[in-house]
Image 1 (cartoon, rainbow, N blue to C red):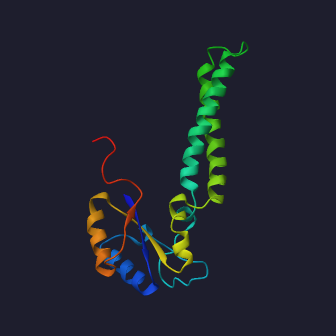
Image 2: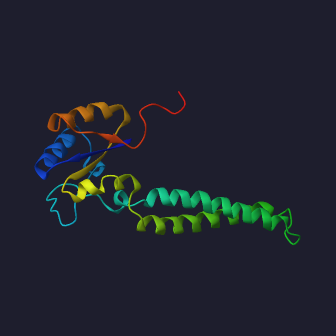
Image 3: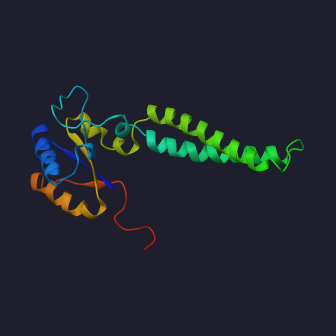
Length: 169
């Protein structure tokens, strides 16, 4: 799946685009709309906390950093004289899991307080009254979906979270 972002000037056009995406068999749970506070979205699928914050990336970073810290703490514990090599694997596993657990919890808490970094570049336009639509589409259908969006908004600029070209061809 690839998430695409695009701005729409008003609710009527957004409804037409969302209906067209639904007809293209993009499930409603994969379509998210972000608007200025107090803007009635009526029956449009509103973005939830996972789309509006950096919760998922922060949890991932917390797991990696906490796991690495726990592994390092386990290696230090094994190197100290009281620890025996018989239980070294258990110590390493326990400290790595504990570090990853604590890291994911702390990372998630921090991520909930931060706005989504990708959405920050659209904040001024959202505050000016435009609506930001996020759609998660299969990689092989991105061009088709972009063309469907352009039927309603010919001048739309569709942005994606990941590059079209692989980093290592």
